[in-house]
Length: 385
Length: 223
Ligand SMILES: Nc1ncnc2c1ncn2[C@@H]1O[C@H](COP(=O)(O)OP(=O)(O)O)[C@@H](O)[C@H]1O
Ligand SMILES: [Mg+2]
Image (cartoon, rainbow over all chains, first blue to last red; front, top):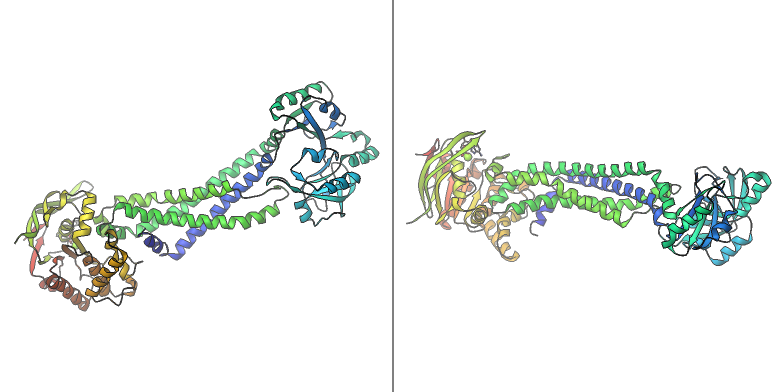
């Protein structure tokens, strides 16, 4: 511990160089954590899925609907305890960039199947009573300053026409991963308009949400549902909510892979930045190391000086990097809330970033360590001179 | 009286790209306890090499070097490091102080390897800096000191562990005449008042005059 002071003093020898190195590491660690957070945000949807929910959709594609009449038949399958359904409405709210999920849902069952969406009982009742009522998530309510009783006008695109909804409730998420940006309104209200304007599109749902009594029965129940609609005009595909969500993510798996790759490149860059500093540093101090050895200090002491300084720089850089990650992810999360409803720095990301910083600190000191250890005292003393 | 340093048949060569460069050949010499010896000779004659061998920071190819009864070349690396810490005080031409440390901390360095307490270390360091006349410069860094003062700090660092021998490689080589005088006077005092055995390499005849014994090296052989 007596050498600690020397490590510290050595570090501040070239203040600018050390400061630049620390800054480089900080920025890189921040970028690493940010990219990891992006990847995490992609997968957070999976974390939010429930093991007892199945999604039944048109077997051809998610974009083809299913008749609303399937509901009763699905409900009759053994093991199914509740069935709800929804349509992806989308539309444009004020501006095309305001992209948050807007869905037509079955008001009687929907919230029963999604206990993670917390909605006060009286708001739920108000929602059911009014045909053009809607519920918004707390994040969306906050972003657009929506309060109960406010009107929301959405221009339909998938379902053309202008729709005006009245906010009757604001839900909050039970879990960290719960998406608080969604908007829900009456499926019946949408269907009513379709019956009037486009009768052939009326009577369809986008997908069914099936609650099963026992998650262990997933395979049997899924097969049972798909079996009854086999050879019908709209065959179904039933899978767990998790598999369904994963299907969406795998569509972007190449991007995720690329981001992952970049995040490792960043680790490589930190390594180069620090290794460069440490090599320069150690080269300048070859004679000092020789003097210390002459005085009786051991190779281990010298190694402690070199690795200690390298680690200290890496850890300080890492800590600053993580500290700035929070405000930056908060800012970026705000901007990207359309794409990533949940954008949080995970503890594992911080741990990974910090372990990488420590590893980099250790690896960056290998070359200087090797030099210091293999340079004899006599050669070291002759150095510089 | 038993010599404190007894060198027998010492040889040393360096190798550069498998080319042998003989530096010292069959050196034998005794240095008495309490001696102040000046090792002279032209540049490249092997003075530094001989001094390094005596001080245990380099190893000979052949021969023995007994210092205070210890055959130095037979020690392994860690024994040698410990031996140096306890028995040898080093003074270099370019002082070789650690620039980030104050005079006090530089002198304290060798004591960090001893079991002394912080308070004891402070006493030793203050005493050593007092001997070299820099009691009032303890918190100065090398940059804030003159060359002569830096060398005095280096001498304080060399004596703080109370070593058996002091080796000095051209200790006045980088100093102006007045500072050189001060350093030589200091070394003389260490030798006379503190009975330190001193081996000093120099090619300055005026410096050598201050020593009791002068030995000359020429092309790796003692004259
Ligand atoms: N580490 C080394 N590698 C190769 N040659 C060396 C080394 N150290 C010293 N020499 C050579 O040994 C000879 C003696 O060097 P040195 O002992 O430093 O002489 P002096 O101190 O008398 O000037 C010189 O020719 C020098 O070039
Ligand atoms: Mg020399």
